[in-house]
Length: 124
Image (cartoon, rainbow, N blue to C red; front, top):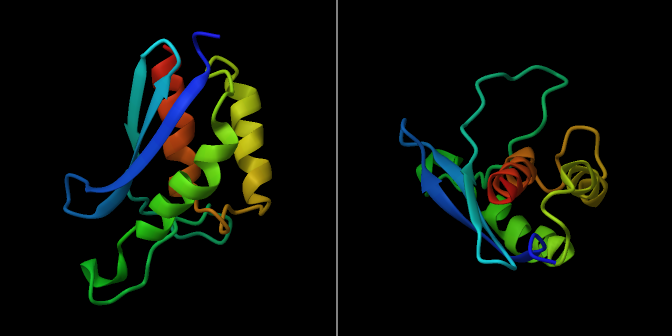
């Protein structure tokens, strides 16, 4: 299938405010690619999805996202490989099921959203 996910790779980048964020690249079987980065959220409400941060005060005042990058590369990537990027609803359900928490605090909303967005870009 031309639109099946062949590879997923995430990395830490800095957003326009110099804050670390997750960027994910998805490559499809036909060579199409999609890249998406997740901006830092400003909301801190009780019901907000959790943006996973490293909390290592020696790096970016604890705001690094290497844990989220690792979750994307090591947990999410292997599960998403081979899935159809055109099946956005199924991809998103798979991502939510992998995390299994209501506020995305296991894998991080930043990991999950970057994969979902990159898949949509690659499929387009």
